[in-house]
Length: 99
Image (cartoon, rainbow, N blue to C red; front, side, top):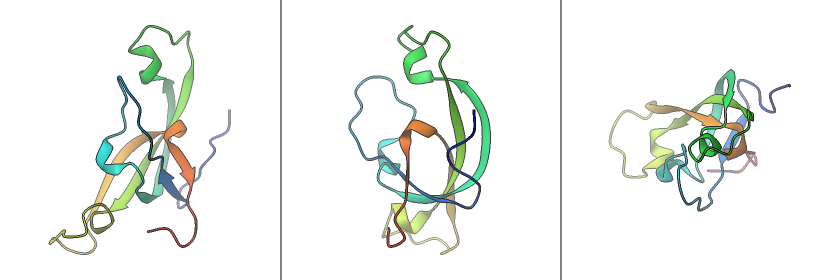
């Protein structure tokens, strides 16, 4: 299966409530970043946690987000970034005028 996103592509992390076991931190939801790299596919950990996976795999990505985009009062260097791994079902195409 082909990855939906490619390195260098801007993405938005979905901003939705998700009860239970999820692997996407609340503080990055709604944030916009760039795909740093495409990682392998893995069993869906959100389904696996409840024993209902049945072997479903999902694509994983490394996403780079500027620290100032997450925390407007961030006082570190402007080029500081957060890199985190996000599963494809949490990613959306970002609009050009996104934050």
